Image 1 (cartoon, helix red, strand yellow):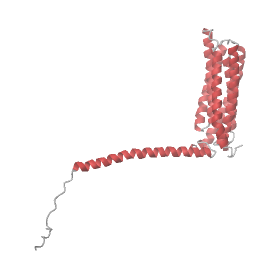
Image 2 (cartoon, helix red, strand yellow; image 1 turned 135 degrees about the vertical axis):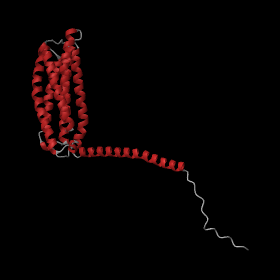
Image 3 (cartoon, rainbow, N blue to C red; image 1 turned 180 degrees about the vertical axis):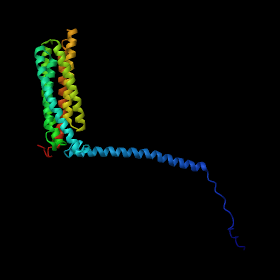
Image 4 (tube, rainbow, N blue to C red; image 1 turned 90 degrees about the horizontal axis):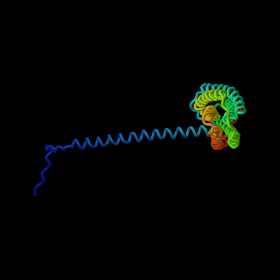
Length: 285
């Protein structure tokens, strides 16, 4: 028998041909997969961040503090609190004067819109006074419980005022009370509308910074007053040229009353449960 020949150690192995297209294809596929996974990772990160912020905000509110406590430094919060107090005082003085004038006009000119504006101006005085109480204590600038108390009171006041406005407007429509038109009514309408809308814008800005629903509600009331001021002008001008549209004045009064009523009910629905949740926290008196 013959022995098997030993393998030749000097033999050169055959070269392996690597297809560059296949390699590049794998690389490109890997890169594309990484690029596809990267946006998904970023979107997941952004979603996680938003969820985390929402949870933090909810935990802060559940802890008896407003969201403004996370964003404002102590000296900034106190500065905005003082601005809210100043705006409330100015609003009380101005709207009290406008309420007296509007009541006088509504009696002299038999205007349901003027009466509605006068009542809304009186409501603005009350709402600004509630905001004054809300920010009277420097330590309670971020107090959620104090905020919710103010909102609940505002909701009750809104509902009661809307009922009075609706009653007067419906009575004027039922008795076909015709408004009287003159230049004095026009001047009161323009001044009232401009002043109330300006106050509303300032209150909205401060309410957004302080995350205060009470300030925003006060601003909404001022905005309604401004709209009612211009509605007096519109209804009077329409009645002057079209006497058969005598019901426009009373209809605007009914519409404004319904808007205030709806806002008051919505405010109570939102704030009463939150007030119950925070009733165990310290009340800043």
